[in-house]
Length: 322
Image 1 (cartoon, rainbow, N blue to C red):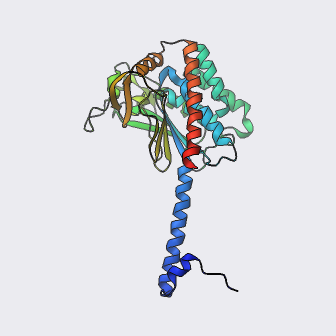
Image 2: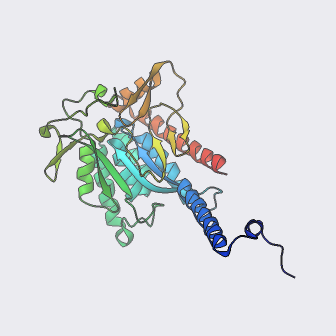
C-alpha cells in the first residue's frame, strides 16, 4: 500500500507539471538556506578590542571559548571561524589563532612581568613554531575554519587615519610587524581621539614618522580607528572588551563579552566603529590598569574575570541556541 502523501505533495496536487518542478525547487532552496543560516549562526568571529595592560582579560575569555569550542557533544556547537584584534587584543588574537595552548602561559607571564606583551608574543610564537614542526600553524589544534583568513590584525593607517587590516591564514614574519604597528601609540595621540563625535567627522591622521613602516606605508595603534575591530559580516560577531558598555546579546548577529558593571556612571560615549563605552568608575579603574599603573595581583584578578566571563558566555550560548 502506498504511504499517505506528504504535506508538500498535497500542496502541489493539481498543479501544472512545470509549476510543480518550480515548487519543489523552491522547497529545496529554502531548506538549503535554512541549513546555511544554522551553520553561520554557530560560527562566530571574535573581535578583541584594544586593552593595553588588560591583556589578561582577553586571554582568559579566549581560553574558555576555545576550550568550549573543542569540547565534543554540545547541544549547540561553537565554531570560532575568525579572529580580529587591535592593539593588545591583536597579541591575544595571534596566540589564540596560532598557538592556543599557550594562552594561559602568555597570560601568567604577562601578569608576573606586568607587561612585555610584544616580547612575550614573539617568544611564544617562536617556541611554539619550533616545538610543533609537524603541524605548525596548520589549525589542527584549533577550531578555526579553513578557506578564510584565520586572523586579521587591525592598524590605523597614518596618512588616511582609516582602519587597515593585515590578514593571515598561517604564520608569517609579517605578523609580528603588523602587531607592533597595531600596538604602537603615536606621540601626538590623545584618548579623546578615539571618540566618534559625528558620522561626518574626518579621520585623524598622523605623520609617517610617528608610525611603524610596513612596505613603505606607516601605521599606528589599531585601537585608534578600530577600538573593536571589524569581523567578517557573514559570521556572528562577538566583541570581547574589558571595558563595559553593554553586556550580553546586542542583536541576533552580535554579542559582547565585557565585565558586569553596576558602578556609578554619568552616561556613555560611542567610540569609532560604533563601540559604546560607559563613563563609569569601574571603567576609570580599568583605564588606569590599561596604561600600566597596576600590580601583578590586580592583573591576576582581571585574568580570572576573563575566565569567568568567557565561561558565562558559553553557558548563555547553549541556553539561547538550544
